[in-house]
Image (cartoon, rainbow, N blue to C red; front, side):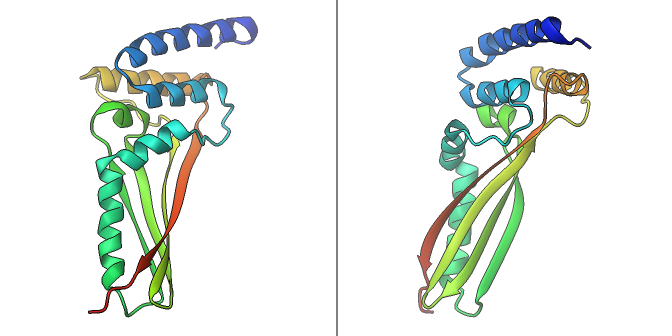
Length: 169
Protein backbone atom coordinates (compact mmCIF):
# COMPACT_ATOMS: atom_id res chain seq x y z
CA UNK A 1 0.00 0.00 0.00
CA UNK A 2 2.82 2.34 -0.67
CA UNK A 3 6.41 2.44 0.35
CA UNK A 4 9.15 5.01 0.19
CA UNK A 5 8.32 8.40 -1.23
CA UNK A 6 4.68 7.53 -2.02
CA UNK A 7 3.93 6.50 1.55
CA UNK A 8 5.72 9.57 2.93
CA UNK A 9 3.83 11.85 0.53
CA UNK A 10 0.47 10.25 1.36
CA UNK A 11 1.06 10.50 5.11
CA UNK A 12 2.04 14.15 4.70
CA UNK A 13 -1.18 14.89 2.78
CA UNK A 14 -3.25 13.05 5.40
CA UNK A 15 -1.61 15.16 8.06
CA UNK A 16 -2.46 18.38 6.20
CA UNK A 17 -6.12 17.36 5.92
CA UNK A 18 -6.22 16.34 9.59
CA UNK A 19 -4.55 19.58 10.60
CA UNK A 20 -7.07 21.65 8.66
CA UNK A 21 -10.10 19.74 9.95
CA UNK A 22 -9.06 19.16 13.57
CA UNK A 23 -7.36 22.42 14.44
CA UNK A 24 -10.23 24.50 13.05
CA UNK A 25 -12.40 22.72 15.63
CA UNK A 26 -9.78 23.21 18.38
CA UNK A 27 -9.15 19.46 18.64
CA UNK A 28 -5.49 19.89 19.52
CA UNK A 29 -5.23 16.62 21.48
CA UNK A 30 -6.75 14.60 18.65
CA UNK A 31 -4.40 16.19 16.13
CA UNK A 32 -1.38 15.46 18.31
CA UNK A 33 -2.39 11.82 18.75
CA UNK A 34 -3.15 11.49 15.01
CA UNK A 35 0.34 12.82 14.28
CA UNK A 36 1.86 10.29 16.70
CA UNK A 37 -0.08 7.43 15.06
CA UNK A 38 1.38 8.45 11.68
CA UNK A 39 4.97 9.11 12.77
CA UNK A 40 5.50 7.73 16.29
CA UNK A 41 6.37 4.20 15.14
CA UNK A 42 4.31 2.63 17.92
CA UNK A 43 6.36 4.22 20.70
CA UNK A 44 4.63 5.06 23.96
CA UNK A 45 2.91 8.44 23.89
CA UNK A 46 3.42 10.73 26.84
CA UNK A 47 2.67 14.23 25.63
CA UNK A 48 1.48 16.74 28.21
CA UNK A 49 -1.28 18.07 25.96
CA UNK A 50 -3.31 14.89 26.51
CA UNK A 51 -2.52 14.74 30.24
CA UNK A 52 -3.60 18.35 30.74
CA UNK A 53 -6.91 17.72 28.95
CA UNK A 54 -7.56 14.53 30.95
CA UNK A 55 -6.74 16.18 34.29
CA UNK A 56 -9.25 18.92 33.54
CA UNK A 57 -11.99 16.60 32.29
CA UNK A 58 -15.12 16.27 34.42
CA UNK A 59 -15.11 12.48 34.13
CA UNK A 60 -11.57 12.01 35.44
CA UNK A 61 -12.08 14.59 38.20
CA UNK A 62 -15.34 12.89 39.26
CA UNK A 63 -13.66 9.48 39.38
CA UNK A 64 -10.85 10.79 41.59
CA UNK A 65 -13.21 12.64 43.91
CA UNK A 66 -15.39 9.55 44.31
CA UNK A 67 -12.35 7.46 45.23
CA UNK A 68 -11.12 10.12 47.65
CA UNK A 69 -14.48 10.03 49.49
CA UNK A 70 -14.27 6.25 49.83
CA UNK A 71 -10.69 6.35 51.10
CA UNK A 72 -11.28 9.15 53.62
CA UNK A 73 -13.79 6.91 55.40
CA UNK A 74 -12.00 3.59 54.90
CA UNK A 75 -10.32 2.78 58.21
CA UNK A 76 -10.65 -1.02 57.93
CA UNK A 77 -8.24 -2.02 55.17
CA UNK A 78 -4.55 -1.69 54.43
CA UNK A 79 -4.81 -2.00 50.65
CA UNK A 80 -7.40 -0.64 48.21
CA UNK A 81 -7.60 -1.12 44.45
CA UNK A 82 -10.37 0.04 42.12
CA UNK A 83 -10.54 0.12 38.33
CA UNK A 84 -13.21 1.01 35.80
CA UNK A 85 -13.71 2.18 32.27
CA UNK A 86 -14.74 5.70 31.40
CA UNK A 87 -16.05 7.00 28.11
CA UNK A 88 -15.80 10.45 26.59
CA UNK A 89 -18.81 11.18 24.39
CA UNK A 90 -18.07 14.59 22.85
CA UNK A 91 -15.40 17.05 21.90
CA UNK A 92 -11.66 16.62 21.60
CA UNK A 93 -11.37 13.77 24.10
CA UNK A 94 -14.09 11.82 22.27
CA UNK A 95 -11.99 11.73 19.09
CA UNK A 96 -8.64 11.39 20.89
CA UNK A 97 -9.50 8.87 23.61
CA UNK A 98 -13.17 7.81 23.64
CA UNK A 99 -12.61 4.85 26.01
CA UNK A 100 -10.00 4.66 28.77
CA UNK A 101 -9.37 2.77 31.99
CA UNK A 102 -8.91 4.60 35.27
CA UNK A 103 -7.50 3.02 38.42
CA UNK A 104 -6.97 3.94 42.01
CA UNK A 105 -4.39 1.94 43.96
CA UNK A 106 -3.73 2.85 47.58
CA UNK A 107 -1.98 1.48 50.61
CA UNK A 108 -2.47 2.61 54.15
CA UNK A 109 0.36 4.22 56.06
CA UNK A 110 -0.76 5.18 59.55
CA UNK A 111 -3.72 7.59 59.33
CA UNK A 112 -3.10 8.27 55.62
CA UNK A 113 -3.56 6.56 52.28
CA UNK A 114 -0.73 6.73 49.76
CA UNK A 115 -2.68 6.85 46.51
CA UNK A 116 -1.80 6.48 42.85
CA UNK A 117 -4.37 7.38 40.22
CA UNK A 118 -3.78 6.20 36.66
CA UNK A 119 -5.53 6.55 33.33
CA UNK A 120 -4.46 4.57 30.26
CA UNK A 121 -5.45 3.05 26.94
CA UNK A 122 -4.20 2.07 23.50
CA UNK A 123 -4.69 4.44 20.58
CA UNK A 124 -5.87 2.07 17.87
CA UNK A 125 -8.72 1.35 15.52
CA UNK A 126 -10.19 -2.12 15.73
CA UNK A 127 -13.67 -2.17 14.23
CA UNK A 128 -15.62 -0.75 11.30
CA UNK A 129 -18.73 1.22 12.26
CA UNK A 130 -21.92 1.93 10.39
CA UNK A 131 -21.21 5.28 8.70
CA UNK A 132 -23.79 7.52 10.37
CA UNK A 133 -21.61 10.50 11.27
CA UNK A 134 -18.30 12.22 10.70
CA UNK A 135 -17.05 10.39 13.81
CA UNK A 136 -17.87 6.94 12.45
CA UNK A 137 -16.38 7.84 9.05
CA UNK A 138 -13.19 9.05 10.78
CA UNK A 139 -13.07 5.82 12.75
CA UNK A 140 -13.39 3.75 9.58
CA UNK A 141 -10.59 5.78 7.98
CA UNK A 142 -8.48 4.99 11.07
CA UNK A 143 -9.20 1.26 10.65
CA UNK A 144 -8.11 1.47 7.01
CA UNK A 145 -4.95 3.50 7.79
CA UNK A 146 -4.01 1.02 10.49
CA UNK A 147 -4.68 -1.93 8.16
CA UNK A 148 -2.32 -0.54 5.50
CA UNK A 149 0.29 0.30 8.17
CA UNK A 150 0.07 4.06 7.85
CA UNK A 151 -1.15 4.27 11.47
CA UNK A 152 0.74 2.40 14.16
CA UNK A 153 -1.18 1.68 17.39
CA UNK A 154 0.48 2.89 20.58
CA UNK A 155 -0.09 2.91 24.32
CA UNK A 156 -0.47 5.97 26.51
CA UNK A 157 -0.76 6.33 30.26
CA UNK A 158 -0.50 8.91 32.99
CA UNK A 159 -0.23 8.56 36.75
CA UNK A 160 -0.34 10.92 39.67
CA UNK A 161 0.19 10.39 43.38
CA UNK A 162 -1.31 11.98 46.44
CA UNK A 163 -1.80 11.43 50.14
CA UNK A 164 -5.26 11.30 51.66
CA UNK A 165 -5.94 11.60 55.37
CA UNK A 166 -8.35 9.10 56.92
CA UNK A 167 -11.19 10.90 58.70
CA UNK A 168 -12.33 9.30 61.96
CA UNK A 169 -15.85 7.92 61.87
